[in-house]
Every structure is written in C-alpha cells, then in structure tokens.
Amino acid sequence: MDATTTSTPLRRRWGLLLIATAQFMVIMDTSIIGVALPKMQADLGFTPEGLSWVFNAYVVAFGGLLLLGGRLSDLFGARRIFAIGWLTLLVGSVVAGAAGSAGWELLGRAVQGAGAALIAPAALTLLMMIFGSEPRELTKALALYGAAAPAGGTAGVFLGGVITEYVSWPWVFYLNVPIALLVLAATPALMPAGGRRSGAVDVAGAVTVTAGLALAVFGIVQAPETGWASATTLVTLGGAALLLALFVAIQSRRAEPLMRLGIFRAPNLAAANVAQLLLGAAWIPMWFFLNLYLQQVLGYTAFPSGAALLPMTIVIMLGMIVLAPRLIARFGPRTLTVSGLAVLAAGMAWLAMVRPDGSFPVDVLPASIVAALGMSMAFIPTLGTALSAARPEEGGLAAGIVNTSYQVGSALGLAAITALATSQGAGRLGDLTALTDGYSAAFIGAAVLAAAGAVLAAVPLRTSRPASQSQPATTA
Image (cartoon, rainbow, N blue to C red; front, side, top):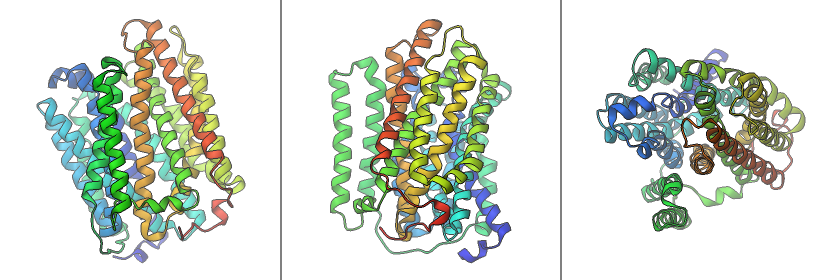
C-alpha cells in the first residue's frame, strides 16, 4: 500500500489515531510501573538501589536506541519498523509481566524500551509522510501527537495504581498485549508503506551511544551513595564520556553513520533539539517528584494521586491541541518556544514553595497548571521545528534525534535531580519536613533547567514565518 491510500480524510484520521496511540503507549510505559514498584521489590527481590533500574532499563534502552530506530526507518520503511517495534514491545511486555526474578524483569523492561525506540521515530516519520505536504494539517497533527505524551504519562500513574491495587502488578505489562495486537492488525491498512533504500546499519554507533548513556545514568544515580569524587563515580562517568566521544568519532568517519553529523547544520535543528533535551530534563523530574510529594507528604494513595494529576493533563492536552497551533500561527515557533520554557520555569519555581503541611488546592493545583501551560506551549514548536529542518529522506533520522534528545534529557535530568533531591532529604521516608525540602530542591533544579532552555533557545533559533504559513524545509 502506498502513501496515497491514506489520502482520504477518514483514513488520515484513523492513521493519526494510530500514531497518537504509539506516542501514548511508549510514554505510558515509562510511568505505569511507578506505583507497582514496592510490590515488585517484595516479589522479585530488588535491592533499594536496583529498583530504580526498573524505570531506567526502559528509558536507557529507549533513549540509546532511538537513533538506530530512526536509521532503520529510513532504510527499510517506516511502516515496517513501526510494526516490528510493536511486536518487540509485545514480547518485552510478556517477559516483564511473567518475570520471576529481578534479572528477567530488567531484561523485559529493556526489550520494551528497544521496541519503543523503533516505534517512536517510525511514528513521527509516518506522521510527516501523511501530513507533511499540508502545513496547517501538520501543525494540528503534531498537536494531537504531542498531547498524547502527557496523557500517556498520567494514564500510566492512574492505571498503574488501579491495576496494582485491584488486580496484580504483572498486568501493568500485560495491558500492552491486546493494544499491540490491535495496532499490528490495523497498521497495514492505515499506514503508508514508504520506500526502502540501500545502506548500511551502524551497529558500532548504536552500541557505543547506548552503553555511554547507560553508564552516564548509572554513574549519576549511584553518585549520592558512592560520592561524587569517589573512584567509582569518576571511572563510571569518565567511561560514559569516553564512549560518547567514541560514538561521535565513529559518526564522523563512517560513510553511512547512524547519525550524520552534518544534519545539525540544518537551520534550527540543533537549537530545537537542545530545547527538547532541556524540556525533558525539566519536565520528567518535576512530574516524578510531584507524584512523590502527593503520596509521601500529602498522604494520597495510588488512585487519588493519579486523579490529582488529571487537571494538569487536561491543561496540557487543551494547550497542545487548541492553544499552541493558534499561537504558532500568530507568533511563530521561536517566540512560543522561549515563552513556553519561561512559563514552565515559573510554574516549577512556584511548586518549589510546597509545604510539609500543604494541601493540593493551594500547594499543587495552581502551580502545576502554570507548568502544564508552559509545557504545552514549548513542546509543539520545538518538535515541529526539529522535524521540518531535515531533508525528507532523513525524516527518520530527524525523528530519532528529536526523540533521543527528549529521552536522554529525561534520563539524565531525572538522575541529576534525584541526586540533588536526595542530598536535600528526599530519601528520609517518614520525615515530612526533610522530604518536602528534598522535593522543593528538585522543583528548583527543574526550574533552572527550563529557564536555561529558554535562554539557549532565544539566541540560536531563527525567527521564521508561522508554521501554518510556510512549508516545512526540504533542504538541509
């Protein structure tokens, strides 16, 4: 089936729904395990330090393999890689749900992350194939795609609590199975096939970037316990830097690299990816520690904690679908990116004023809505700018890079902010004052990252016509 099959409005809408489902699921799988972690620790024998890798195994595999997923999408066709990714996610979900030990659980989570790394860039490539020729429709499609991310994050917390409390924790993974089967059945009819082209797969590049990211996250997570100046931390972080430098060296010398370094000469692409990286580095830690504040300080159980995040999710979805496209059309992506990151920083700084004896209506709701508004303003223009800057034949690579930027930012940001929060008392369970001090420090750290993103985006991003009035760039 070729791309013209999706040209009817009905097929395009169903295709967009399938793509949004992909974004929803890959983000939901990062959050759905949060409430289930204590029971998983008891059943599978995780150490307190090892438990964090139930989250990190997914995120590191996801972030580290996204570039490979984008490259494979360009070489073998986005629809084919999209389907293989869903099949991989299905297998990983079964392994994670059926795991009887910590090792098998981490393997299942890593396989899930690998599947997500194939799905995400392929989904964005398919979106560009379906809507890229119509800028107004593309902006609307990106808005719905972007709104699926916070919806997936909140749904993960909410469903994770319900499933863990009323069924059992393995079903937070088995939930993926029927959804994956439905997507696999619908993909051939709704997704454009895309073309295949010849080329090599840079396995060495994929291995070095994934290993470097894993070592970096591991070193940052362990540093509060081993000491930032300890030999273990220095060797781990030094090894991560060496592997990432080796990755860059490999890319500069290969005829067909995993990531063509010259792609960053495309106007605005590098700046948009820096903004996405800092957006992830600020947003994910804020969401993570806000959930902990609700449960460990305000005393919310799993169900009301997930429900408390719904207002923020609604604001993000409405902001991305209704507000952001109109603001982009009026002011352009650069202005909206900078403004959105600044508003996000303001909301996080407001959250830093949480109190040990606080309440949801006073300490959480207004500040979280401001932060959600900033997120909804910044996400769509940076994503659209990054995707439209690349050549059409490198759409998968551009999608892989921008997804990698956000996920790498999320992983490293969460690791760094966790270290900061722990040093300020976030690990002292039962001590509400210490916990609040730690979480407040986390929100301040996230606000600083968002503000840095606003400053860095303000300088290099070029002013351009609104997305609804200009065609996406087709040359690097």
